[in-house]
Image 1: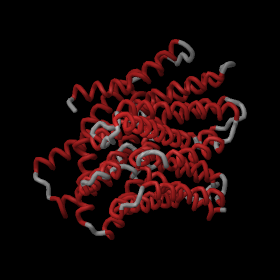
Image 2 (image 1 turned 135 degrees about the vertical axis):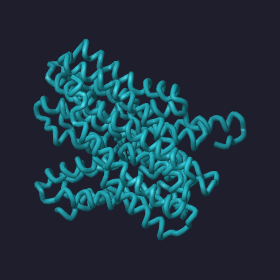
Image 3 (image 1 turned 90 degrees about the vertical axis):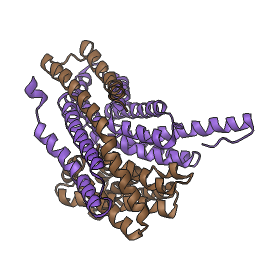
Length: 229
Length: 251
């Protein structure tokens, strides 16, 4: 994408919400003026940041993800896939700010019984294991619905036995693990892996990794909820 | 004013640095042990990383300093109004436009276009996702106003998702569940959560901790269902096409 296209794309993304908020300012809400000005300046910051992010992401995060995906697939070693999937899922999750916030919430819900560190570790391991399964899916040609369905079915069974305060948190956790850095990398990982296969099914196989990464923590937290009970 | 725009800047910088760190390490490890990329390509990737990094820091700073604060105020203000039921339509509107401003969705759109060669239209997919997020937010507002349990939405929603999954092409199943992760990106999650907590604070019988939880789960579920619905429409129109032309088109 050229810079001009990127800027136009970003304006189309940011202006609608800006217009809605400005309209609210003149109709129902009437923010204090200093907050309103701060908002307008931060809109400019957001537009500049979004433009830079989109111009850099293709050459960096997407490119790295695809290269890693291809290398893994070409190596053909199942052990390597499992090890890599778990390690990568674990490390990117631990580094995700959303997960830290979530962990603090859960620590509150459980009255401190589940420590922040334990929770981060459990969620990260959940992502790691499910990401390895997603990698293995491509090698063994397992339909995605089987894995996702299995994951959610397991979640439902666990929810039945889990301490109730963990349930809503668990479903939120599915979202906390997919931040703006992880999303491009994991998406591209799938695209790179299935590109090696080059079959007709490749385009369908390219996706589903993020979904698997979201089921992992749901199952992990519910498991914790069962143990906590 | 400028000072308030850069409030919390160091935290954002630290968060984004931490998020990039594992990927940088993976890249370096692969490059040293396996790829040994030529210098120009290496430079291009590193420059891209730096650009994306700076961009993300600025974006998140803008989102934190501007959008989140405003989101909380909107919820707070409208929740106090005698006609606070307008949280429902306003939630719908905000949900629709905030989804358009989500970087993670843009990246997903880009990859989908690349992989499917335009088979799945970018704009259509974006509008379906926006509509799903919008519905989820207005239902969350219904929840905050009435106290109805999240299970009345989550359980039928996921059941519907699995029924729909059996009737669409596999790529839509994968895309739908990916979308569930993507719609909970930094813009959507933080802005909408601020909005929900802001309104929940001032509405009697609603507690921010309780009603704030679960909203993200609802947004994810609605994104999944809306992409599956898109998939169903694709299957329908293709089935029609086959009947008309008597030949199956390769996707």
